[in-house]
Image (cartoon, rainbow, N blue to C red; front, side, top):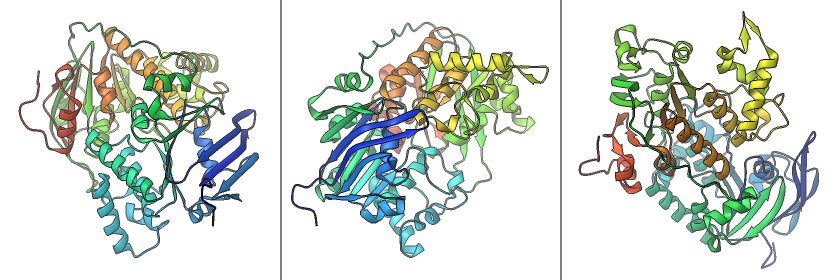
Amino acid sequence: MAEEGTPLLRLSGIAKSYGPVQANRGIDLTVRPNSIHAILGENGAGKSTLMKMIYGVEAPDAGTIAWRGAPVSPASPADARKLGIGMVFQHFSLFETLTVLENVALVVPGKLSDLASRITDLGREYGLDVNPNSLVHALSVGERQRVEILRCLMLDPALLILDEPTSVLPPQMVDRLFVTLRVLRDRGVSILFISHKLEEIRALCDDATILRDGTVTGRVDPREASARELATMMIGRAMPPPLPAEIGTPGAAMLELAGLDWAGPDPFAPSLSNLSLRVRAGEIVGIAGISGNGQSELAGLISGETALPRSRMGEILLGDAPVGHLGAAERRRRGLAFVPEERLGHGAVPELSLWQNAILTAHGRGLVRRGMVDRRRARDFAKECIADFDVRTPGDHAEAGALSGGNLQKFVVGREIMLEPKVLFVQQPTWGVDVGAAAAIRRRLIEMRNAGCAILVISEEIEELFEVSDRLYVLRSGKLSPPLVTSDTTYEEVGEWMIGAAEGTAHAV
């Protein structure tokens, strides 16, 4: 039994290296009982590695971990869970061929019928609804994150590690989740909270530890610092000023949906009903919505990964040409670039190097000639992307799977932007990306818009859509809201459309 005043968790001198890359150096961290403790840092600062050592996924090269005052060495997540530590990873740890219920049952003891009821009840309570019988491979990224959060909560942990837990929630549900987290804290659960949403950290957290380049560079009470001050401490320099809007008159329609309907083979997936929207040259159109309302299905149809029958090819147009029947490669040849929401395994092949991943979509830029890969051109392309988008990596030879989530996201987004497309379609452009990198990506999107590109953005971060979008829609239950003029719309109104509570007339165009 720990003495009164003993920290719940204390790390001393923690270090971890992967070959020549030192992920953590001399980390000291103390988590008090009954506290919500934020971990802040840029992508590649060492946050995920540190959390993996606490959770038993990795072993430190040096230093000690103390739990309730006693030294411990968790050798696996099972060891950590026995101590009372739960974790939701940024990259999920679910079996895709199993159902939600079966994934939960692998970790949480109990009868399947009881577990199913608990999943439903907790999901409703926290605003994290998910069907216990859905197969994980059919779930969107956001829905998978809900499963991870619920699975941790069902273990009744003493320390809960949350990595970007609010990225799938509308504002109303974020507030509700925060109430829940505060209740958990007051009942004796400590929380390690990783988020790039600095205002959330200021509103929720009692303590914050800041990492930069694998070391602790500061400790602060986030309630006593502004978001800009926290951002500056994270990145070690002042945040760049916002890019002037320079909004001009949009040009011709470059992407159009005309009464798009879709019902896929998955009985658990939402159907799309009569979707119509238009994205013009020189504008950014955003699509908001809670994950699992048809975003993944819509993305597959727009990107060409899911093709329509030739008889319905006019439901999707690039320029004035019907392309609904065409595959992804042909749509790319016609000027469409696409950033999928799942960067690892979909946007990039984990086992391939960055220069090899560049070839996947940039082969038409002279990287492949007469069926042969031009290695020099491919490496030059990858190096330019790494430099322009500040991808923290040893070089273009690094495997995609070895990068942090945020750095891989910067590479995938940068690769598509460098193609200079006529139409850019991006899902979750800054998911898991730190505040400095997120600002840079959004700035590049606005620059592309100002240069005449037509851009469609699907994002579950309302703040992001308000920052970059000229108009936006809300996707709910496979249906789109009327178009909303961003400058005439509030966060609360968008949130109401997301949960089906919107009333009155939208600010349509």
